[in-house]
Amino acid sequence: MTEIKYAKHVITLPIVKGKGAPLMSAGADVLNGFNCHIIYAFAFETGITGKSVEPHTHDYDEAVFFLGSDPHNIGDLGAEVEFAIGEEQEKHVFTVPTAVVIPGGLPHCPIITRRIDKPYLCMAVSLTGSR
Image (cartoon, rainbow, N blue to C red; front, side, top):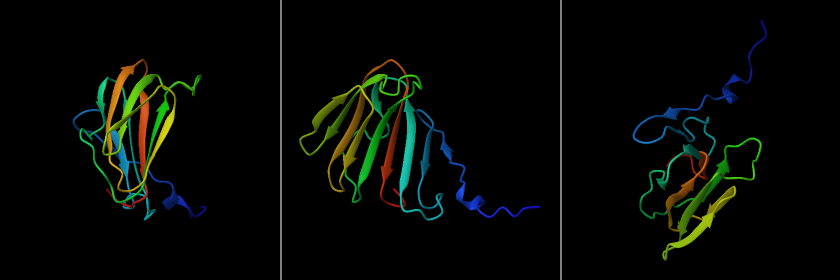
């Protein structure tokens, strides 16, 4: 039998179920020490999306991705989303796949789904091993 040499590099991602939509969350503890943290969930209703109801900051950089779920039209987010950035809560509204790049220390959130036609994926990638 052939030795399975690289199995440790193929990782089943943990799904967390609780209040709201199930989500996937993995940091260095799950990703074999890889120094990042990824969390994602599908948004399927209007209102605050995610667990951050108030503006907050991190001491690490983060990028939040908003991706549509229609494989035949990947340029359509399927929703209208509002994302607040900065101390003054500057509002950014978008309806197409978008990445919001947030340097450490910059206040951000909440994320508000104003309109939803189809579920979309919201994924945050942080340059830290844990959150």
